[in-house]
Amino acid sequence: TLSLHDALPILGLMRLDPLLDQPVRQLSLGQRMRCEIAAAMLHEPRLLFLDEPTIGLDAPAKLAVRELVGTLNRERGVTVVLTTHDMQDIEALARRVIVIGKGVILADQPLAVFRAGVLAERRVVADFAGEAPRIVIPGVEERARDGRSLELAFDPARIAAAALIAAIAAEHPLEDIRVIQPQIEEVIARFYDLH
Image 1 (cartoon, rainbow, N blue to C red):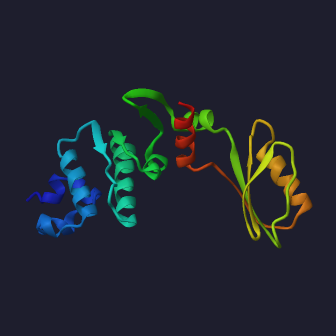
Image 2: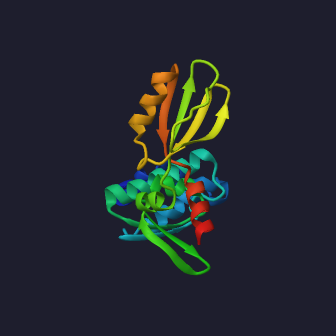
Image 3: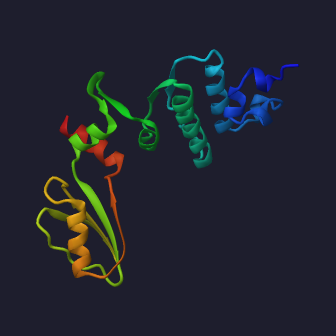
């Protein structure tokens, strides 16, 4: 005998087995969203359109939906077209972005290329053993300061991250240091400011 789970492998992938006997009105928004994506996958489409799939979801549900969408793309080869205002969805899922403004395509490129073209700077966040010192290095700007932490912005074309870290570490006792990209919200805001 073939079980419903065997007939519809998407149920296992989306962890929907426990929900099969529950009335829809008793499902949370996140559970309903996972069920809707499962329903969209019943015919194994090669292309899936999702409009704001994480809107209104709590953090665990958002992570579950993002994980599911990533799995569908990676393991099943489903192309996902995602429309969203949730920048974390973009960070987590997108390799390519299409930015639309006033009905016109303003950008269509890989996320990394888009990010670098809009805001080339990167950031170093340094946690010092004592009070954060003033750092004066050409091509480096202070973005934020909080007690022992300091966030610096730099253009990697002007100074390499390794050289910047070495210069800071040579002069000041560090507890931790990390290189980060600017938040995607900042990149998108800067892009719209330019257009």
